[in-house]
Length: 303
Image (tube, rainbow, N blue to C red; front, side, top):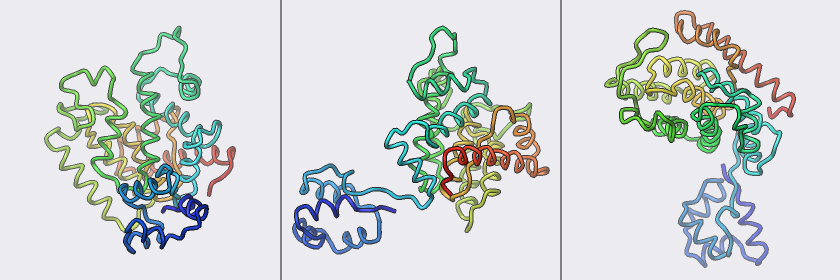
């Protein structure tokens, strides 16, 4: 949803109504109705109004999320607020998600990169660990920006691109950054979906998921398990999968879950035994919700 407080303030300052503005700029009644309904105007219309009022288009409107947590994350992100929920989500999810996949950065080092964009050069850390930490911060930003959009292949591939571009893997001709894998890969000693079948499997998974009338916590966990079973990318599948879960929890106003690195064995056991022993993964993700609830309690509950 969008509010047009900025537009109303600009018009009030010059003593003009929205109807008068529409007549002056030959804007249709349909466009005026969109403003009333809180729908976003086209970039072209926003540019015309902004040019007439001599301001930036971003000054005319603001997106307001139905989910209070998403709204708070967007406001803290835009304002660059330090020490809030956005800040702590970035540090804690990035540290844990990367560490699960073998990153050598500590939580303190991850926090230093987020807060100061620096790292102690004497630590002898792999460059890719540092790059992928910064990339993960940007991937969370992307999730926050596109939360309300239906989950799609384009979003999933963009998450992979954000995470893996500019890394050593990206220099390999056969490593498809931002696209599905070209070579077979294994997880836990078991072959995953063959490269030739990945696109069709992902499309079927998305179609079934997006067709659901109601998305709840278990539906998101089930999608995550199915996504990891397909393992559509050459590398980075776990991080992309957990970012997808973040997006969908925010989209459907469900408490987020952060899988802590120290719970990695339980998490992998849950994925390996899904769906026969589905309770294991559900319980691990519920524990991840408890982790996030504790963070919310410390910083001020949004729900």
